[in-house]
Length: 148
Image 1 (cartoon, rainbow, N blue to C red):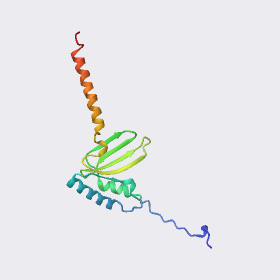
Image 2 (image 1 turned 30 degrees about the horizontal axis):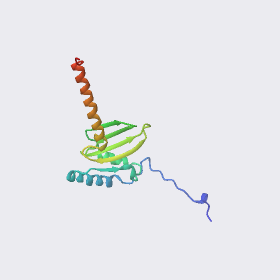
Image 3 (image 1 turned 90 degrees about the vertical axis):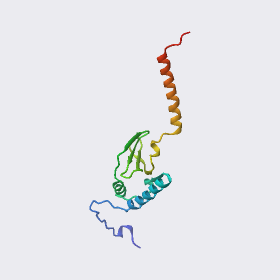
Image 4 (image 1 turned 180 degrees about the vertical axis):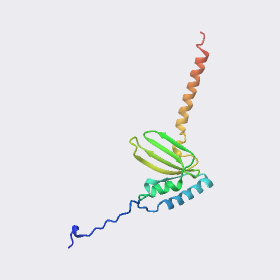
């Protein structure tokens, strides 16, 4: 019976180049289909990149293929989120980090506007009430005290 220490192990150098599992191209095809669906039917799609078995170099390859567009949005809420338009309009790269700057999510969102930066109905209702209160307060200040 052979012992563990008797098994030959050979380590091969990769010359410092990252191993690549070639996942960028299939994801680009998935993005193409999602963009077609958005244009034809108005239906957005989100691709969770952390759910895909990337090898070293795959994420960088994908981000290089997507390129950069004209819009970058930074959201600060329980950490930082960077929302970046790719070179393809309607294709967004959404990178969420926690307060310790650790990545908690990385998505490709195919949408007119990423969900995270769309105003929520509850927030808009609250804003409406605050704006009404502010304008009522200003109206009172401008008019002065009411005569008795």
